[in-house]
Length: 92
Image (cartoon, rainbow, N blue to C red; front, top):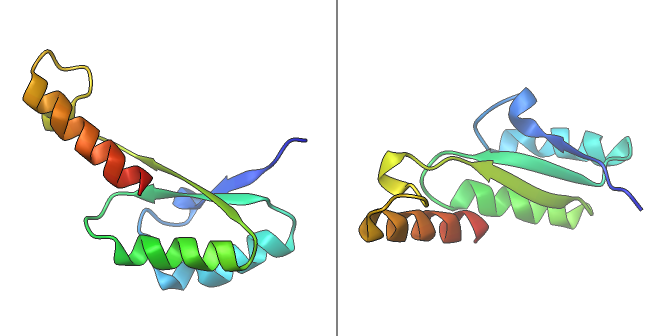
């Protein structure tokens, strides 16, 4: 069965508790999941966002970018290691 999600970048690139009513509405109209942009450092806002989504039955995904110092295809091993750390952080 196919699932349908919605990316919150339509409304904001910032994840905050202010988006909880939006998540509630997306769930109420039938969406299966929600995707957010991970751009700011720190975990607190993303943790709360994920916990709220989970509490109402929405699955979550995320999108983020890496800068040139975190290039996973760089020939430099240290740069690739930074990329791996960033990707692991994004997954967490």
